[in-house]
Length: 289
Ligand SMILES: Nc1ncnc2c1ncn2[C@@H]1O[C@H](COP(=O)(O)OP(=O)(O)O)[C@@H](O)[C@H]1O
Ligand SMILES: Cc1ncc(COP(=O)(O)OP(=O)(O)O)c(N)n1
Image 1 (spheres, rainbow, N blue to C red):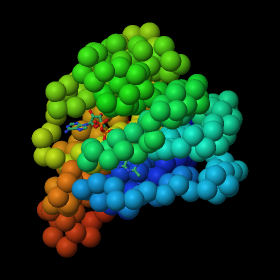
Image 2 (image 1 turned 135 degrees about the horizontal axis):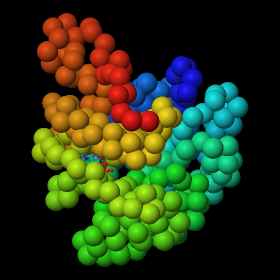
Image 3 (image 1 turned 180 degrees about the horizontal axis):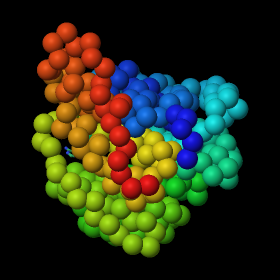
């Protein structure tokens, strides 16, 4: 393992509110000592209350960003978040196949609906295309329950997370994390052979905006740091849950943004002038690799 800072890529959309999307991913990558590069495929006008508008970046601009990042940086992991059109999915499929063939782990976070209830993807054909184009290149996919149900094409609430994970594996995902919620604490990880319940504590402070983005970027960042997939998904859940627990509860009326860097805990809230840098950057990655 080299001593250099691992470079990670996120392919996703901008959240003007700063809590989720590529902005959230950059912070999550930084929190585990990774350098973030970005390919922006969409822009949202968004705050914690929801999404007021969204715009798609033209395909040539997406491909040019991908080319610039791939030719300029030694990528060690990638994640793909919100891709809300058939055109975009088809455009990124080829470059992602090449990245996967080069041995770059790819985390697929099939974001479709936000905590505040806004839809991010056009369903219908997009649902099938996500499985067709993204599952084959994925190292792991990280849907929440609702996204897993949509992708699996089953009724809400009728299936266990074990059954959902197996159904998604049957559609081609090599490994699946179905994340937890208020009624199902911790995450459910199916590595393609065995099931693991990643135990966790649910925090009811309403600071969940960006938790899903942070979680999938953390998995990618931890893989880039050399952790095994099993260690990465366990540690990512732990850090995502902490980012909720430490969340920016004073920001916004809707679901408040997570704090994956520990900024609030280590600067403004307790630190007087708030000029100390977040210590989470220096936190050792003391988990098995
Ligand atoms: N309130 C919470 N308390 C503890 N952990 C949480 C909470 N909300 C989310 N998480 C964790 O954060 C990660 C992402 O959560 P998820 O529910 O998938 O987010 P989203 O629905 O935004 O995609 C998962 O590991 C999940 O267990
Ligand atoms: C631009 C953008 N991308 C993704 C999301 C969804 O983020 P997520 O981490 O799942 O958190 P919530 O928004 O669901 O709380 C987003 N909101 N915006």
